[in-house]
Image (cartoon, rainbow, N blue to C red):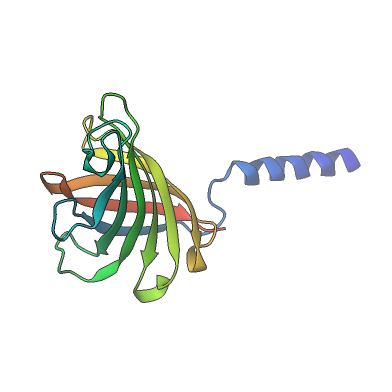
Length: 170
């Protein structure tokens, strides 16, 4: 009898460990307005092979961002919050960016909460990429999941990027 209880306990533990989501799955979609061009830039080079005059497409270039997030692709739509973090060109061919950012929510039910997102963006390879939701704070504490990012529009190095996040909390 004890062996049977132990076996059932181990099976339950294994099933719970394999489940990526113990609570309800959440989905939040927002649009990031990344402006590298001056004078109203929200992303700026802070380091690189040629110092602050380095190009984002150059290996080793690092940018710091403070990008506006909105509910719709239009910049004048309802503000969701800000994306604060950095990009680093991590490909010797210049075709992949690593980024880590905090999505800081500024409205509605998640005001003051954050999602932490990180991953690589092989921007020359496809229009749709998957990156990781690796954490959160406030009402989104311990969030984990993924985000599908899609370039909606661009002009030079400026871009409008859709984030479709799916994650669980707890």
